[in-house]
Image 1 (cartoon, rainbow, N blue to C red):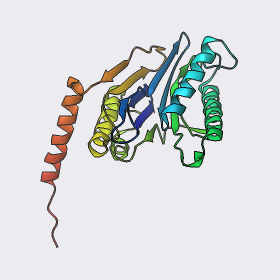
Image 2 (image 1 turned 135 degrees about the horizontal axis):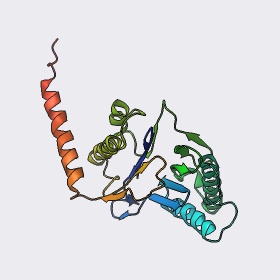
Image 3 (image 1 turned 60 degrees about the horizontal axis):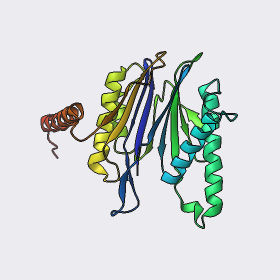
Image 4 (image 1 turned 45 degrees about the vertical axis):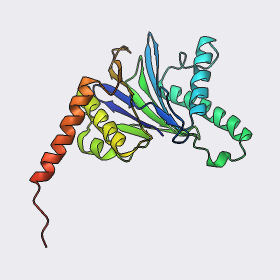
Length: 240
């Protein structure tokens, strides 16, 4: 399973993904689910959840077509909308191909993708792309998307996040959201891949891998757990 979250805010974008994949309790592995494409006039971030073979095929096709300068590719599109259309078409291409080869394709979880970033000439944008190839865009009312095992971390984001949340606070929120998922679902696991992108910077250096011994992650997960317990103890008891 997977948990990925992406946020499109006034100051930029925040991305966080776990890295665990499994095909049963005896086959657990680590694979990166956050992929960054950086060129002079663009920074694109793709996050994937679902069937690992599908994810790897999509990323491989997108990268191959960029290297060979095939048309269209992610270095040629002029808007994030066009980029989302291209990723959706590539996803549909892989799903259609793999479906024909699988006897029980209807039960296969081909997963979803999140695509965010900025191309020169427009503001940062964020899209949630479905296996059918269609997609929706984040808005002021819904400034974030989740894919994968999202239910455990969603309430935290809903209570905290607004468009005006700073990127640093938003990243803290994303990490707490993932920590809550880690505690409740063993199919989501460390390390985490995160990225913070500031509007108009066209800088992809804000990437980091968060491991079990990361001091910041250890600090906030401990503080969050203790804070919840302290708050709970201060609540008035139930009475009939």
